[in-house]
Image 1 (cartoon, one colour):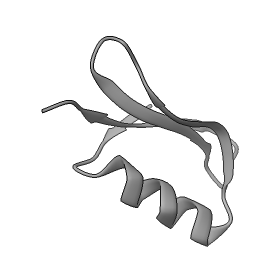
Image 2: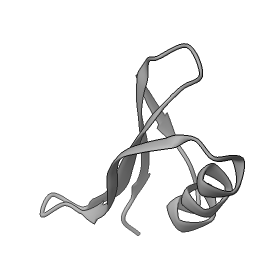
Image 3: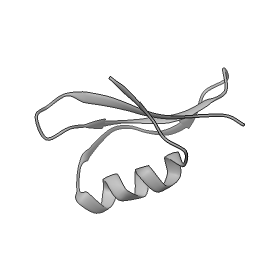
Length: 53
């Protein structure tokens, strides 16, 4: 699942604040997306992404 956000860095900080498992840190992909992966409380991996401007 992918969740698109306006500010991926703020979402990353909020995720860390709540203590969720970061599966893959914030990364700038060459195709223009900044994203990270987090494990939800039920074990699903979620792609949190922000499209470049």
